[in-house]
Amino acid sequence: MVTRPWQPPRNPRPGGGNYYFLIVKNPEINAYAMPGGVIVIHSGLILNTRSESELAAVVAHEIAHVSQRHIARMLAERKGNPLMTGLGVLAEAAAASKSPEAAQAIITSTIATQLHRQLSFSRQMETEADRTGLRILAGAGLDPQAMPLFMEKLDRRTSDLHGDITQYLRTHPPSIDRLSDTRAQANQMGKRGVREDSDYAYAREKLRALTAPNSPAITDGNAQLTQYAQAVSQLRRGNPNAALQTLGTQSRQLPLALTIAAALNATRRYAETEALLTPLADAYPGQEDILSVLAEALLANQKASQAWQLLSRTQLTEQTSLEFLEIRQRVAEQAGQAAEAYRSAAERSIRMGEYKHARAILEQAARLPSNPATTSARLQAMAREIEQMETKEKQLDKF
Image (tube, rainbow, N blue to C red; front, top):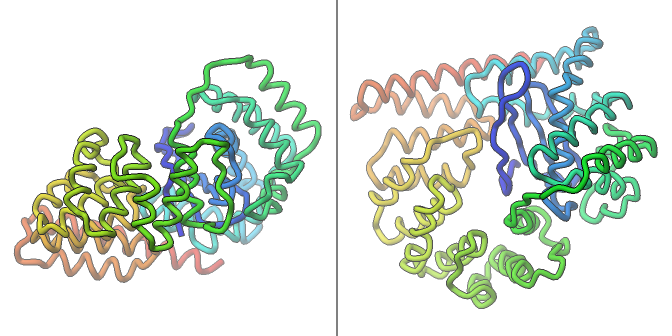
């Protein structure tokens, strides 16, 4: 399962291509880099951070493994190992694919996880990744001190409240020298202004409600964050009225407004959702969470055409969620956009690795008599790309 409480952008990486960031539901405190610029982040890691800088410190370290070509070097050194050969095929499939969705499906496959566990970075590589990661962290306006602080936390194992820490320690061996070097490097950078996103803590607590509802919230005495965590938990337990009692029915802060709107929808107060979220949809164009909840309310109020106008302006990307595609499909069906409804269903199947089903949907959609020629051609091209993905998947099955 891939969740998306935090969405770092794709960024250019050395040698061409982009970085892709995936958040995976997994209680292990871990993150790792894969070929093709893919950084996999476990939910257990996010739940054990107290700040955006702590998470960014780990992510920056993994970015450095890619930028310093550590994985590429290991692949070159172990060409005779069949698992490493499989990792090479995996990298080629992810990097060569014209479809970011295909890359995501390939990277999150079982074989990808198995191959990742064969990698273990040397101390020299870890030190290099620490130093490069610190520069990345500071360059992003975040706190370099977060890296040694989080390393020390892992070393003491005091943060292991909700997840298994062993896998991260196996692939990223800590040492006193490494911690001392990282702290010294961070100190040399001096004090600087830190630009953390205030919404990070809200995203973390939403992720907690989705993936580890029995673990205690980390609110650090923030009353509003405490109320938010309580309301999200109440909503997840099927008690929207309690969530509305906790938060009220109005808020200008996006995480709170979204939770209120979801509770309003659950209590069939759709007009209030529309009034609350329409200004936010204008202020945050393309924000999937806003659009999904607002479209749900519009659909319930028999405004399918208006809902489709809202959703159709948002381009589908590799970060488009299954939830957004599901509401997009329903809105397209009710708005008379048959080809787009089929496309939404196919995109969902691609993200779940159901390539054969996705290809069948697209081929059926391409034959719709109401399609313009350009629409049919685009759907056929997508079907051909999926066929190539199926071929790559068969190659991976050999390992």
